[in-house]
Length: 490
Image (cartoon, rainbow, N blue to C red; front, side, top):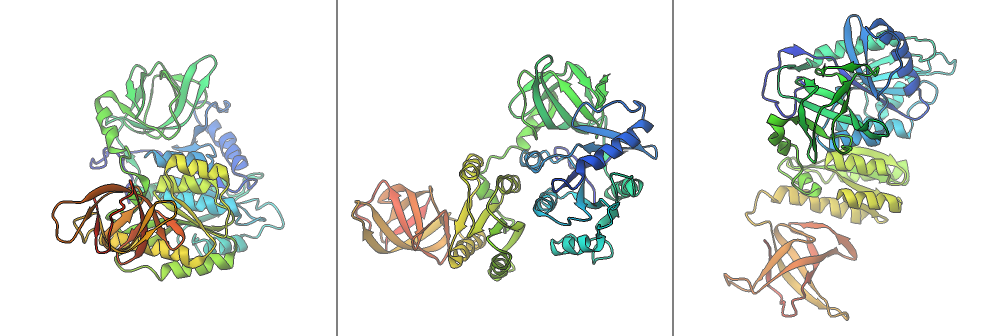
């Protein structure tokens, strides 16, 4: 299992690089305390002594080897890194309190780590407390599809105490051992690639950002590019605030030189490789990417109760076929949240809720990120929508046209609109798609318009797949539409 630079993935790297580790988990479970203990006890072994950390990432020296820690990224920052193509962490330390066990934010962290394809190491914290129950935590993790050693899986699990230091050395040993298995490699002399993990406008220094170097070497004087801006590196500072001349793979570094503050998660490269940034640009709408040739639909599923969630998952699984399947990025009870939207955006997923609320700020975020959010109060409508999506995955490859439907019935409305009751013959109809209408065996279309609305029953939907009946409203209105007319997506 080899980890390689996304921009130069076909090259063989000759040098082992330090692992990059993110620490995640539920609030108050001791993420910051654990990092503080590691920093204070292990940075002192390095060349800078115990100097106070200045940026949101740092390196420790353990057994003469470096480990880079990203200082407790929130789920939002973690998702943004992946959403812009800047996956940076190799390993996620999932911190779970030995007394509280798995909590809602623990489940979110698990989903984010899995979506990022990061390897997980579980640290069961607060083992100094008499009420700590590691076996209970391991069982709860198993229920959330994290199978640790001794509980049916191979995920490393280490009991620790951020207060006393119990198990911390074993945790660091586990990080080094896992990084050897992953064969983490880079080339300091190769193509430069880095990921911005945080950025800000400093009153004295101006725009600056903290980055992790993924490949190559960043030097003072280098001209570097992101998607939207570029700049010449004026100064580099390591995590202790010491000015340095360069940074090599896995190094955390603070960079000055950009004219504006770049967003967290942006990838940057050297001037000679700026054209390679196009490889990472997302030029296809998010929902289109879900329904591509992989024949997998990524779903985030939220429900009002565990019973509903289990019933929904079981019913949805029955809709799968060998050719089209569902991947559940996250399953939980409760309202749809901003974290759900960020996970869906970075993983090209869709969000479906049953008897859950969608706060207005969540809808606004979803709209800005072009993430599909659907909330239902009737279970069969949710199932019908997912079934249509699965059918579209299957039939996209079977037809040369994007979508074709036959008009079965025409329904004039009091408003003057006309609803065409249709059956999809091939491909899929999608809201907003441009279409032409053909009559009988004519080779030329008699009308061209856009699909203004798609309905299944009374429910408005985004897409309808093959063999499904639906109502179609066109813009502009075509008053002469007739039964047996063919609607074809352009």
